[in-house]
Amino acid sequence: MKSNGVKLFCAAALLLGRALAAQSASQPPVPDGFVRIPAGTFTMGSPATEAARADDEVQHQVTVSGFYMGKYEVTVGEFRRFVNAAGYKTTAETSGGGIVLTDKGWDWKRDANWDNPYFSQGDNQPVVLVSWYDAVEYCNWRSREEGLTPAYMRNGDNVTWNRGANGYRLPTEAEWEYACRAGTSGPFSTGSNITTNQANYNGNYPYNGNAKGEYRGKTWNVGNGTANPWGLYDMHGNVYEWCWDWYGEYSGGAQTDPEGPASSGTNRLKRGGSWFYDAQYVRSADRSGSTPSNRFYYLGFRLVRP
Image (cartoon, rainbow, N blue to C red; front, side, top):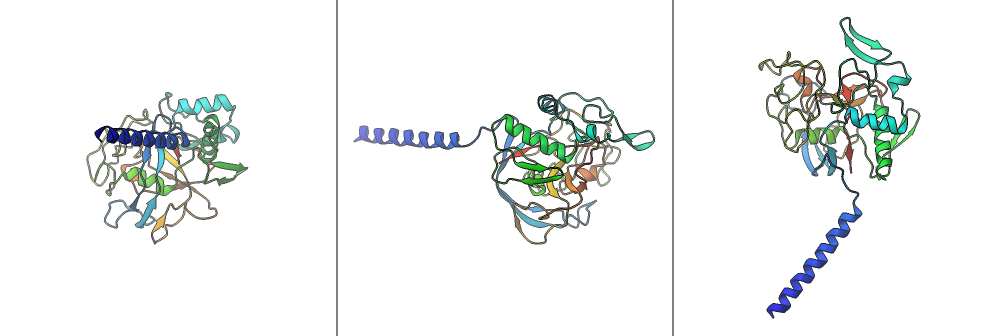
């Protein structure tokens, strides 16, 4: 009887192993540098008592499906491989440069682009001066390179999202904030304050009367700061990150996997603050938008995948 029990146990274990292997084989492999973000429900936005809160941060309940997200912002080195392989020219290169800060203030420089951001960058720093369209093109290129179905279909400035695709894409705003918070509910995933040792922002302007910190005046290598509880780096600061959604007012009710305004708008969402901005703008709930063709030397992106 004991022998039969062992045989039955072994047979069951073999069947379970085969089932798990089959399930694994049906899913595309997830590359290094990505983490699984679990499905869940959270409160999006900020409470009225949060310092530096803006009126567009109305709290509401959101349920998010699970997805994969890059641990790091897309780097100069990664973007360089795309440009070299695809022969791609960015919006800055084809449409007259980008916006940088000089001694005279904000200035449009015709030679400013991802490879010349007007400050020194290494391959492990986040790419900047890329438009929302450049980010879309990178997503599709990387998907094709890895044998995945591209998430986006582009016809000029019209971009549609194939939600059934398994390729790389930009996060929705809800996915971004959910991942940034990583189960936390305060202004930052670090709590009620964040230091310039933990995140790269303009330390001359700390949050809510806290002590000043360092102002580096440029990006730092991805992963230099403190990871949030889910293992994501630079969700606060370093560079703003493009999201999928058009900017719009929040819905007051509970939502599941929201994708922003249904049709179109003027600005696409960017999240997370940057090395250039004050601490208040790197809060988990802070929102900002830019026209999708804009390119700034503090704006980059991060990838997600189903």
